[in-house]
Image (spheres, one colour):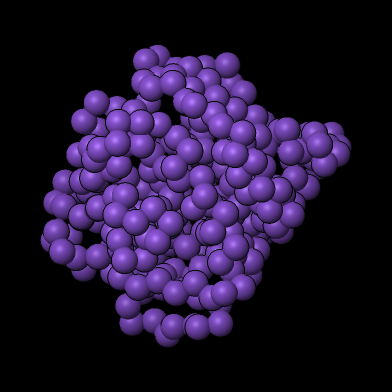
Length: 282
């Protein structure tokens, strides 16, 4: 089995939430995300309905704690507080013990002929996702911030490739951790596309709260793609395998019978992820 499909399946059994079409049967015990791309009017919700069972909530709760740890503008220097570093450690330790990330570790060890102890693996993942670096005009950037949260680049939103963050921003009544932080509306910047329905590509405007400036900033993204339903640790595992070694990690995947290109760019020194997202067929 393709390593990406294997990670996806393991994640759906773990903290991942099954993406379904509006006509599909809903599974309460495993959770679901209803993906509706019939239109893209300002009041239409692409992620129409989300149900996360209690046994899967920890992953999302730990992730939400990280949302306010980063400066919105990519030119701003980060103020890394000890409490924020502890939140990263708590999240990453949870991820390391998940089956998707364990599978990523096994794949990398087997194909690189290296064994990593727990400390080495933690450091590997931290450097890949959370290590901060400068790139062009951006300061203190990290793959985690870019992929999971998104950044402001002048009037544009860059990154922002995680479905759960998008869903919270489109459902402020559900966004209890950062109430009214962000308001998102689907627009006609680009027609939404779905890949059966676990990958969505669309455009939108974002009203994002800048914690450093203590005010909202209006930014937009013409085209954004993200996996739907995958947990934070599941996306971490997929990106980690993709970023492994060029000779062992394919940039294409077949997930749920859909051919995908897994786009990835690294930091200038090649030690960390800059961005990671799927590209669905046109």
